[in-house]
Every structure is written in C-alpha cells, then in structure tokens.
Image (cartoon, rainbow, N blue to C red):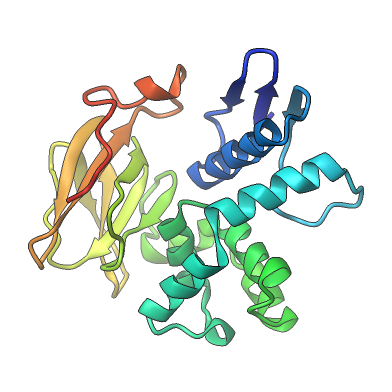
Length: 239
C-alpha cells in the first residue's frame, strides 16, 4: 500500500516505508481523491507513470498531484534561475530539481516528458536508465544511507526535511547543526555530504548569512503527521 483515502473519516493514511518523494506524491494523490469527492480507496501508485488500464478517478488524482507539486511556472522558473536548458538536463540536475520540489526523480522526469514535453524521447529514455540509488552511490560510494536530498543555493523559504539515516548534500561553506547531522565522505564537486543521525529541529547557516530550517524525523515514523517532528511540531518558516 502507498496510500489510503477514507472518505467517511476525511482521513489520509500514508505508508512510512516508501521514499520521501513518493510519500509526497501519494499524499497529493489522496488529496486529489478528497478534493473531487471520490469514494474511499487504497492506492498503489506508479508516480505519474503511464498505466495499461485507464481509470478516470486515478488519472484525475494523479494529474492534480503532479500539477500541484510541480506546476509549469514553478518548474520553468527553477530551471531559468539555474540557467539550465531542458534539452541538456543531466540526471543529477533532474534529481536536484526533484529535491527542490520535494518529489521523486521518476515523478519529475515523467512530468517533464509526458505533461510539459520539455525533453525529447531519446533524452527521456537516457535519463530513465539512471536511478536515485545510482546517483547516491556516485556522490557517496562508500556510505550506507537512505534518501538523498540535494540542497543547492537556490533552495529558499522552506525547511529541509530528512529522516534519520538520510543524506544531504549542500554547497561548501554551509554550517550544519552537528547535533543532528554528521559529515560523511563525498566525491561531489557540488558540495559536502552529511547524514542525519538524530531527530530534532535545527538550522543550516549559509555563506550569504541566510539560514534554512532543518527538521529531522524519526525513521519510518508512525502516528499523526502533526506529531512527526518531536520538538517543535508547528515550526515551518525558514528565514
């Protein structure tokens, strides 16, 4: 199971066993079922992939999720701000954008190809051969970790959310909260890598004097979403 929408109780249930990006997409998908007043259902999602069987309600929920999380204007602006051309996107750049929008590599790649038609089929197939695990191994080949989040210099105005065991890559010159994060070997020219070691609320301090809120969740958290951050459940805004 990826997610469940219970119409009678107006409740969404998500599995904590999926990667963070997939949980995000599943949640948006179930919000789609809620918004369109669909009946209760249990979903196993393909993250905006093409299915052999057309189910109108599932398609509608997927479309809402994809455009809610990855709107055309937002994706276009994110690439323009980084001076990236869709026709020359690399796997690492797609992954970085996916981190920026809080979705999975596959969800963003499919959205760029199927919905926006920003990339040609040949490049789509080439990028499809790369997996998140391959990118993580390329950056930190000797580190065992969970999800990887790339936090670049244009990550603004929202927290960096990790689970215990997740990796974060951030530009050189960023100061980290060592009570929550521990530096690990990294072969990326983009920046340095750190692994989330304990739960809590902290900050990332950047070279320009700004800071980002850092929130580390327990691994495979079970419970109500509002209790997933053990110290300050309502903290959200980054300065």
